[in-house]
Length: 146
Figure (cartoon, rainbow, N blue to C red):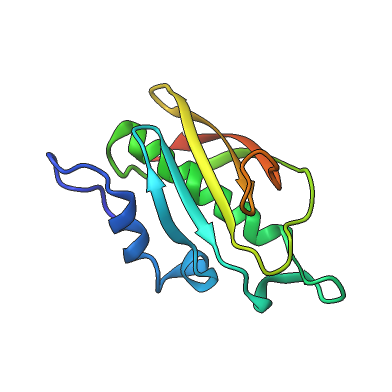
């Protein structure tokens, strides 16, 4: 995807709608929920195809990681107000508990600092109660367009 034309702002809702049929985010059904100046919230609805343990019905960790990687990526684009190619350098995920089977997992990513080449992010995933998170994340992204 190319950078957007000068004068346009990055719109997470429009971007998420555009990728609904592309890549792993589209295949998993990741969808837009809300955003602010430096944060984006996405959702991952429960889907039997994403179960990691058939005996318990608990979602695999990979889809939650993908949700948070996309939410934090989009938070960078919101903070900088432009889609800019980037790569995940480091993403630490602390899984605090399994998501409750059948529930939607919400992922909120925040970009708290941007330098010329690096963006710093943090966030959390929960399944209905932000005070009882499923996971916390912290990461860094590198811009790849220079």
